[in-house]
Image (tube, rainbow, N blue to C red; front, side, top):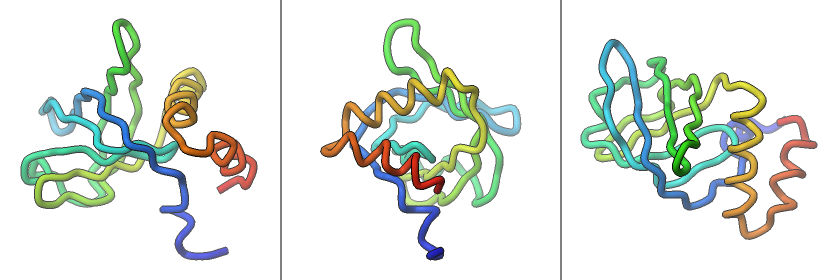
Length: 118
C-alpha cells in the first residue's frame, strides 16, 4: 500500500458551522472541505492547537442535525485547521457519507473508497 492512503479520500467543498472543543475550550469554526475521514476549517491561527491534539467536533448540518465526532489535529496553521476524524457512531457516519456523496462530482467514487477498505 502507498503511504498516501491517509489523504486518499475524496474531499468536497462544504461550508458548515462547527464547534471544536478541547482542553475545556469551545470555539466556533466554519468548514471549508469535508471527507469521510476529516475536515479542513477556517480557524484563526489554527486556534492555537497543535498537531496530534485530540478534540471533539460538532458539525451543524441543518436545523436539528448535529454530527459529533472525536478527532485529532492533522495540521494547524495560518488560518486553517485540518482535523482527522477518529471516532463516530454509525448514524453519524451515515449522515457524513450522505453529505460527502451529495457534494461529490462522482458520488460512486465515495462508495468505491469505502469498498477499498482504506
